[in-house]
Length: 273
Image 1 (spheres, helix red, strand yellow):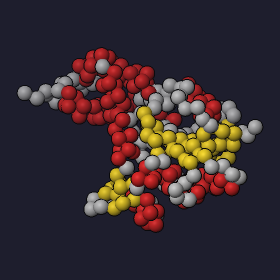
Image 2 (image 1 turned 135 degrees about the vertical axis):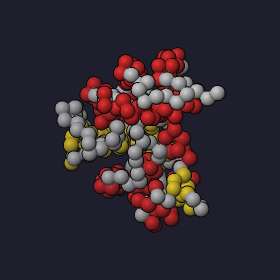
Image 3 (image 1 turned 90 degrees about the vertical axis):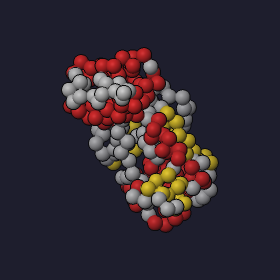
Image 4 (image 1 turned 180 degrees about the vertical axis):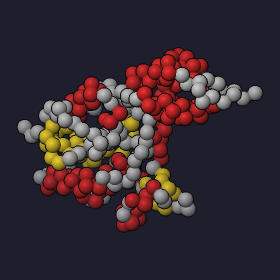
């Protein structure tokens, strides 16, 4: 017989707090007390898949199985993204890359630090190609996320017509292959993007840098000041002098900008030597 459905009340406060602590330890994501209903809803499918009838049994499993913690993070992390989100960022990116290229730079390294399902790194890739020409100069875009599910979607590079609606028609024709139901990112664009799983709460990271640009948008809102400060310090270390950091509109970096200068809201630059 299938396991009974979890009840609306079986995620008690003590179990919820223990799950919150595990999420924070594994990812730096700070789930507020008001997230209990959201966590219960998102875990219900996982409990059914595992044949578990209550969240206490699931908590016991989490404490024994580190692989299941990754599944937990997949379930509770929010992967909201879109192509050309905050379009002004990509205009600034294009101007910066063009200046570097005109100065003779041929190697470019960029990082989409919360790449989700791939819309952001592929938008970066399109911007690079439009600015530097296709095929672009030696250019790689590291696309990292804590969610294995989101990274799988990024690697697949396949999107519905609704998802690519924000891509200008000329770019859609140039960089996607359309079939009956989906739009597939072309191989020349996919080759520029390197998806990797990374926990942003656990610096130092394996990259050596220097990076020309970092996009770290709409993820630091889930971190407390301790995690956010450590992440910003690591981004600053990895950025080349004069390199750019783009963040989300809801993210305030006030009091945490050691070595970064605010160019305009959501846009920061590492101080030149």
